[in-house]
Amino acid sequence: RTLDLSCIGSYEELYRKLAKMFGIERSEMLSRVLYRDATGTVKQTGEEPFSDFMKTAKRLTILMDSASKDTRRVCITRARNGECGLDASNKTGPMSIFA
Image (tube, rainbow, N blue to C red):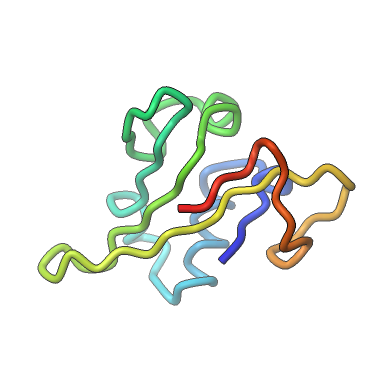
């Protein structure tokens, strides 16, 4: 699945979109969403200001069930054509990465 970060303005909005995409309660997102930054470090969302997250996030992982180690991964994109939305484009640019 693809998520366009350029159309999201806060962690709350990110959690809302992910909850809708994967059918998970927003309240569960806080402890389940991890990302890999530009240096390869895995961090939990919310550890740094959202603007910094937007600049450095390269891979997003949602821990679905810690007992089964089930995970879901999301392709992060940044729109170049001004379109926003979950299905704005299946194309990826230089700032995109598949998880």
